[in-house]
Length: 276
Image (cartoon, rainbow, N blue to C red; front, side):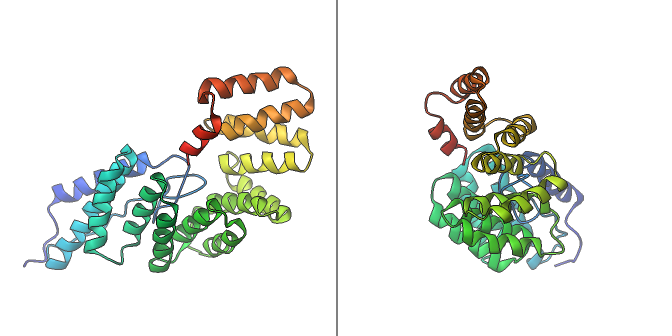
């Protein structure tokens, strides 16, 4: 076969698909194998590759198309289709860290925590680097292994090519606080906020840390910044109400409680679980 490049229309279609994925992935949660689906937890990106019209090139194009379709379906909330395309990409390229990451995200959305962890671990082994290390650390922290997650965030931050450092620092600080390592938690969270003053993850964790250390005024300041930085979640509103109760402002505490019920119903814990 000729070594001519793929027709320009095909390349443009791939670039458009990648741009759509990047736009859809600009909210705060996991790290795909290259830009950002979250300013705190995980990261997501579509990789653009030059594909030649050879047997190898056609195979690479097929894998990339499957991955892009999987990402788009995941962003749409169509988990069955996302799984189908990601699994097809993995079957075609068993060493695809991107496919493992996508399958991990689908498993996580479906409540299959152990399966998600296996895919995140596989991605970290196949494509060692800041993104995959951050993702696996985030999974460990969210599944009862906060102390064990910290080494993975350290590995992510040690990657000189890793650009989403504020997110990894926020994750590390939050997980250090969960592990009872308050000194490290404050260090990493302040470093995260120096890099990204509106990091929802870091602000929420600092509010919780200050409240646990009986510094209600500092907790209030961080809580207010957290609620101004992004959409509220049940945990943020519950903490804000608790802080105001401690400070004696029952009117403010009541406003947060009513907002919590209005926005998340009578069972905010269930709403919070649905956001994971």
